[in-house]
Length: 312
Image (cartoon, rainbow, N blue to C red; front, side, top):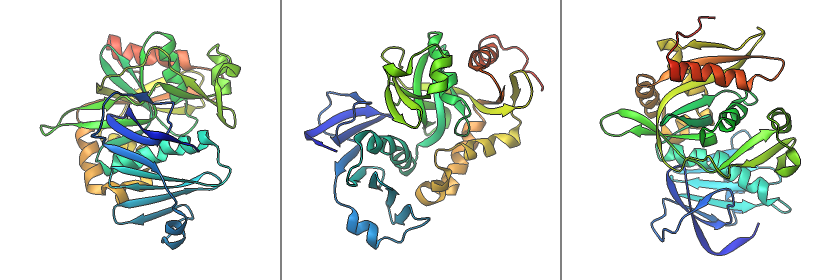
């Protein structure tokens, strides 16, 4: 991976990021100095050999988190302000950036006490709605369906949710960067062509959002957990009070990092406040077939019309 002659300043997740590594996915900014986060190249080989490694891939040292990806790089994330990248021989730039903008940024957000959720978020009538769920649940595909209807994308994969401030007000979703990651099957079902997009890994592609990206932070109004059902139709139900905290913890980005990087007490306090101020739903889709548009219809009925939520 080549470093730029001088660091470039980018903006993402509500942060100004100074990077020695070219990050074409991000939005550049003319701001000079005062970076919130610095990304630089470095040699972490000795650090990794000396670290007390857990599960072969992670190590925690005071305010530094070390992260190893075989055949890609070793990353060091420190204090919510710095990421050092140590590429391994033969590593592809796109693979290095994939983990840099994923796990590393999720860790940075946690260290900065900003809640990262795993999913996508779109803007509907000036409010943000997040789609969370396990990998393969259809989060990005649903967001793409909303984009096809003219709604703006806020973020894909990592959702940075800032607290409502000292008064505990409405949480806010910070814009990430204008790109989605979609599986080839979803691309085809949405009527797009995969050969127009940059291949990432397996059958997943990077989809640039050339228009329809929200550059402004937007208040979070609702969260929809996506999952599959054996039923034949899309089903949407409102989550009960006790379910909300569990869902927000399960779908925090890299939840195993919570206790080590941010603390369980902070996380509990954050999601408790959030759950009391937003609506949370379960959105189930049939295991077979393509139902992104039907899911979008269900979300919009709930969001825009205030119709009674289906009870199963």
